[in-house]
Length: 334
Image (cartoon, rainbow, N blue to C red; front, side, top):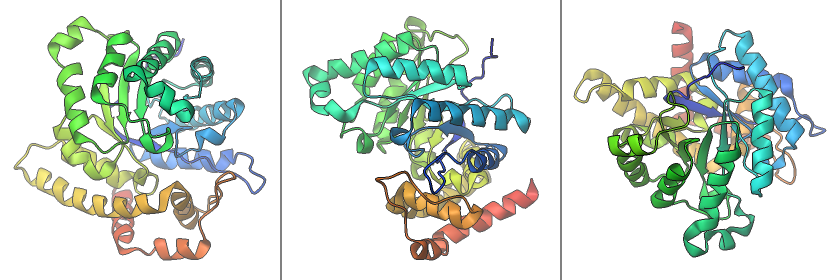
């Protein structure tokens, strides 16, 4: 039986899936990027929205998870868990993907709302959504992280009350990722779920698992931590993982200290660069990774790649250059 790997606090990297010109998986590039981001101190998220999960077959998801696990183990990171996207449009398929992810070596399953029938799912107070998450979590062999991202799930925006109801409904729900930029939602969920009364009444299935709220935008990491967030899953660590990990470390310093002041300054720099990154999307992220590492910039069709000339312009953006220089400095010190 695989040893339990706790879901740590900190920075999580939503890994892109790299494709050859024939649109096959480029597992060598993927393994290289897993190593780059994980050795910098971030946790891999495989086959999520940034990994084009909607374009992957079940066997391709399995191959990516297996590659990530082999890569982590091969560079001495046996203790590092893998969070795998397992969301699908039906409860049945989501449970199947969670089982396959467990067998491939994942430690946690991240589940996004099935947005195709968004209107029907949100009727009657979202009862179908609540049942979807509870039914998946109860049947899943992996602990489940609820994933709220209205932009890629038919506009479904899970509110704090529904999320808390899901946590009540299944002891196998161990976290939530909030890609909705709502610090208030983080605060409300934390106020209920991490209270002593709630934890005693609704313990998690594994007593070693604390419920974690993960922010989906690193540009609000510092205020999110103050509201109860346990980390961030954000695209920027694909380029500058050490810099983002440094922000996490500094942000946990006591207020009023020089370290906390440094956290505020670094948060400002990261927020400015992340604002730029949000405008170019994950296709733009792939182009920047192509410019920096030589990976293929191609998404899977019908998505189109970003233009090479734009990539040449983006990689010289002063906000991004500032962080790339910080990353090089931190890498030289490691």
